[in-house]
Image (cartoon, rainbow, N blue to C red):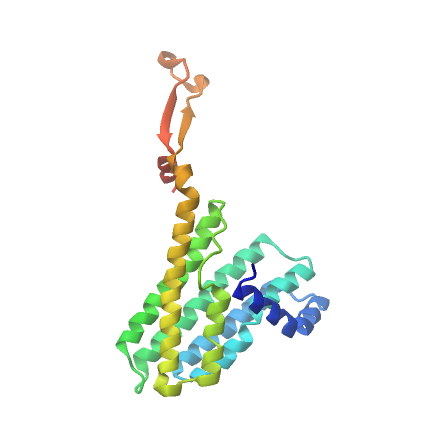
Length: 241
């Protein structure tokens, strides 16, 4: 069943198809596209910090397409690489942090909209956002695809761009406050959903014992026979951390 993320991606692809074709024909590096997109997102975070919320929203509206551009260009030019995926994911974390950090600075320094409570919400949101990406990455390292949750990155980008571009600080900034609170709450909900998803998928494996057999060739003269020890799988996982 298609998710909202799938619809967003399909819509973005239709809009930026000419740009994708142009970049692919000219063999532009996907990593270069990723870098430019991240720099623009960081710039949007700086603009957020200065209090120009509507301008930052429009900048984010442009940079949102870079999330789709780099991957599509990489596929069409046959330049999809393991490092490219790693580089893209790493810079996504930089971009996410820059946006929320910019909003934190806005609520810390703006003389009209200074709000200590929203500063705390933004900081909690930064942690939740990083947890969303970390839980998925850690799950993938265990062979589990934990792409679940109510708020994934495309939705976060849309919520940090469209409402701000259209409304800015409308209603004395309450629209922005509502968006940030929504992002923070749903980020933590998504992180918990992914933790529970991994728990359910590993619960049976953790309860299965494993057998460790000592190699007779490496045994001491006094213990020439092989020995079998039963160790809980959870202990095995701990030993690999």
